[in-house]
Image (cartoon, rainbow, N blue to C red; front, side, top):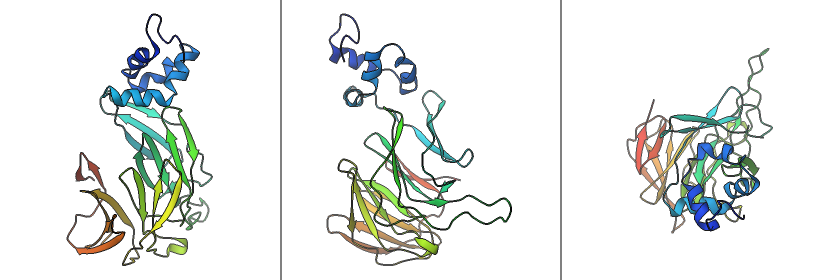
Length: 254
């Protein structure tokens, strides 16, 4: 990068660019090559964090067109369409999705494609694929695959790393396996297995530094104490249904 803005040092110019909302970056990249390089650089993400203008987006996956993702900017009330997820699996469904390190990660899942002639599902076998989307480069990258292919599993972020647990493997066989992913090293490691397996979908969330696995239709909750690498079992009446952590609060929606 050089001479980003005439008369300003590049570090100051980069901070100026950092204040521009993400939705306008694609147009700014057309100004000149130096701006394009700056807007695609890791230094810009660092500068945005330093000046406190990091933005939050709602990430949504569409069934049609297949494997299409969109970002919603709640401040500007704008939707942005990403390049299509390059997985060869048609109508990827029942996957895990989290955000860490400024990237969107899509993990596992299976095909929800239906044969129009027979009405049969395309496949009941899950994948261990992992994809990450870099909003700065605006591209998808294939990451290290999970150790176990799974769908309908618990997934969340704890201390900057992704934890997955449970779910269903081939032929809808329930799994007790759990593993953790380091985004910086692009590596997976197995961790302690769940104490109980359930023939149902499960979801995951992190509350107060603990990873919770909730099983659909059951009151049983399994809790990971990460430092001790062990699971505890609790019997509590959690609400059922789609949920998300918003501002550290578990929020349910319909």
